[in-house]
Length: 470
Image 1 (cartoon, rainbow, N blue to C red):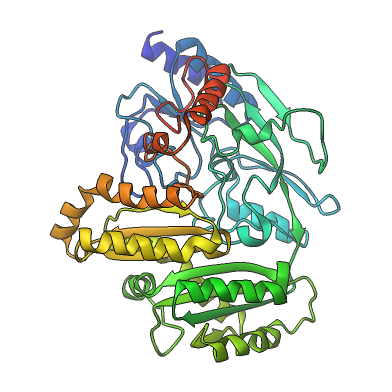
Image 2 (image 1 turned 45 degrees about the vertical axis):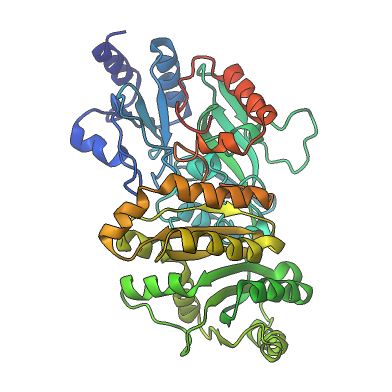
């Protein structure tokens, strides 16, 4: 089909303003958030509803035009960025932003894929419920993207990832057919759990257009604390001790290195160190309870006293107001932005068993420091579920440029160690195009073959987000 004819077909089939072809209009959709990848596209197509998505997919299937699904364009692995070939369309779902249904008795929220995470959180809060997924990009990231990458965030420790938070999906398949799987059931043992095929698949098997999400009782009491700890080992031991006391009431347990905090203090205006004396490591801890009268701050202070005596922590700041709690959270959530302002770095989103976190940090540091003298290690993450962001750079611009050119050598050290510790080279960001080839080293031939079998069965034409994941 002639390219102009294809675009005309889309314009005729879709609502006004759905097809963007002017370079200035398309530009924001062609570069990823980090600025690492930039591609080209025939058009950016913005369907208004699921029926329009189906029409777009059918047209693309007929013309064999590749599609790159995109939500808020906040991904970190280039999964929503087209290649430089210029033959694909970007299928942007941002116009599909309707809250379809909310039920406080069922504890469910049904939304379009283009609803932002913040809007989903607000809808849940409006009926006294909590949607617990929480990310630094929640104001712009969208539910479809969260699902496609199986987003995790800071509350996985208590509530799980998007796989755990989803009851049903609506998906447009590669032939344009619509799978109506928006079930609000907690139990449905009628064969394969089809939704799990599409969660984490990054749009390579179909286009997620809607979802039924789990809601939870909204916490009425909380305590947030910033803790100084001498080592990652001490932080892991403290987590085990606090779990015995607070159990599932621990909703977040974030590990932050002093290097990471220093970048935030340098680059993010109005940020302030919570403690007077610096420490090698810090923990951001959040305890929540649905009982409004719980005196959690006092309970937390009492629980931390033995840890202070035993040397697991050296100091602590417990927030005394919502504003103070928000300020502590900003220190954690602004790390990625501070790194972006500092300059490009070699980033790793890895997971290992919680018990192996200290060993990973020690062995990775020991392997990298002599090999790359002067390397700056910025480590932070969701230590409660074993997910670390382990990022590397050189302070000087010229030195860092040379260092970035050695990304493959750095990745080999880090990823081989992760694999040796029975971990994953992508904990929550996905594979996209960044790790598409790298994953072949760590998944078995059998697992890769199963993934390819699924891809070929659902998308034999190979037009669903080509060049990503598999």
